[in-house]
Image 1 (tube, rainbow, N blue to C red):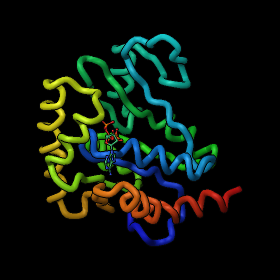
Image 2 (image 1 turned 90 degrees about the horizontal axis):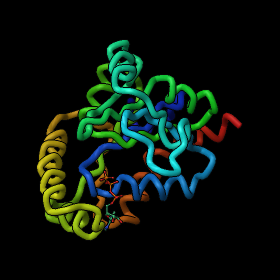
Image 3 (image 1 turned 90 degrees about the vertical axis):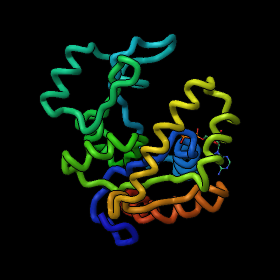
Image 4 (image 1 turned 180 degrees about the vertical axis):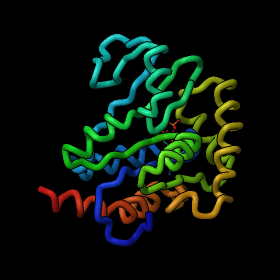
Length: 202
Ligand SMILES: Nc1ncnc2c1ncn2[C@@H]1O[C@H](COP(=O)(O)OP(=O)(O)OP(=O)(O)O)[C@@H](O)[C@H]1O
């Protein structure tokens, strides 16, 4: 998928980059500014619902054997096993969003990107990079969501994810999230042709 050319279909926008780099922050900002252009994709999970979580809204809650069968069947465009629970995006969930004429944004890891590419699903692949490794560590610490152990795990994984920057052409666009507003402007510029196309469908 060539960025900066006029897209002819609303392909999903795939966001990758190490944990804590600011993917969620950028996506939230974009969805806020262009409310109505983006659809909410519902993931599947085999973990138990937490209080207040609604099936079909927060997740499609499913069973391990069912999900394994569906994965084997090729029903998922990507999935991951996180601490013994499966999480994944089904082809059907993606289809539900595009049938509503909305753009789908997926926040997935590089393994997930590999799966999407393998499934030959056309998409716009964006990698969000930290300016330095140290900045990433500071952001994870500042977010206050991790213990020392999980921070180290995330940083280890981050090193591997950053190696994808050496794979020419794997990502369509790489955005360095140093100053948030600058990164957001680049992000917005990258996806604006898709937003324009989405609006033209109304
Ligand atoms: N440009 C920036 N400058 C400073 N802080 C930032 C910047 N972008 C994001 N942050 C902060 O960094 C922290 C991590 O951001 P965020 O939660 O969006 O990351 P993420 O990539 O979605 O992580 P995860 O994959 O773990 O969900 C947050 O506290 C966020 O407010």
